[in-house]
Length: 525
Image (cartoon, rainbow, N blue to C red; front, top):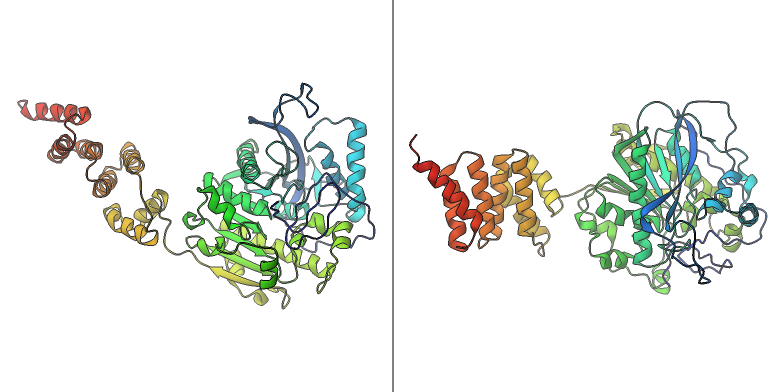
């Protein structure tokens, strides 16, 4: 069975698997003496509000019509989405949420109205493994009044089967600096536990898009600036979401599984990192030896970070962090430290690294969503210049080169150079991707969209490009003829309608257009 995080948790917490962690939030074990996790970054200028919305995605089913015992299921069949929102709030004197309040959310992930005894037992089980007293007061205030203004949106995608508040410290931190952060638990397509297959990854990717749609109901949300941050499994699901959802403008991966399981991306067929052109911040754990790679049979034949040549990619290598350290939930967990005691680095060093990780996430979002030049300089600086302790981390900045060999990528490039360079730009795209084949109907649709927006010279150039790629297509000559006709170039329109009929004498559109133009030319002026 494939796993996508650093440790696997099942009905009992299992032994170390070497590299990956499949966190099953429904299971915990007794332990004590938790390390004192401290998030050392100061809050931003905003107070933090927090609220919970229990809602369903009625476009998808989650329950079967019968329960596991074969009895009719009488509840809602739709997919439950426990939605957590952290947001900039007005300053107030109300009591802050505690870490225990976050742990209590385990009780309502699937069933929004559990029986009191069932909810109490779930919370007790959670508190066996997590120190509810580790943060008597977090930063957030439940249901605090939102602060005026609009703010960029960050969707947080948790790791394998993890709860929505898995990185509550990071989510609160971002909200205090002027972001609306939205998250939901990582669940399988039909079960609370995520499944390590394409069906499972698609379920989380669709959850991400659902949350983006939900953000439309948040008055503070600036929907023109949306990032998706994911840890581990969430750091591969966000690639799947971005491949289908153009509303996403930036990605953050906290030691994301996209790096370690490129075969999943390849098998999807539609997730093509080489075609993506959105900024990415990617954190990696401490270095892994070739021996470990061989032992855990990791597939390194492909590398997502190397393939994303058309995106600005910022890689941060965290020398003091193991995979699970990227989650404050795990850093707060006594069981985490008991089952895998740190070797070279202490829990305190891991906590300090987590705080620096959060700073890099903030600077990346400020640079890409708020277009802050100082934040961009921070990302490109040597770490020591930004005040990072020596030997804690290293950065690798890779600026985008070229343009994606897609219609959208070509459109952006032609907007810069001029549409009369369409043939030249296509040749460059073909050189970058020799297997590139642009469907004539897709290019034809591009041309018609330009015509509808009255970009007639641009439409003509796109239709001419399409003809050069598909010279024997009758309907493309009709398209070019319509563009010429609409722009008043009747002779060129007639020529193309005649060419369309030469290729296909049965082309009724060409015949009708030609008849109309020839009749107009024959009429006395």
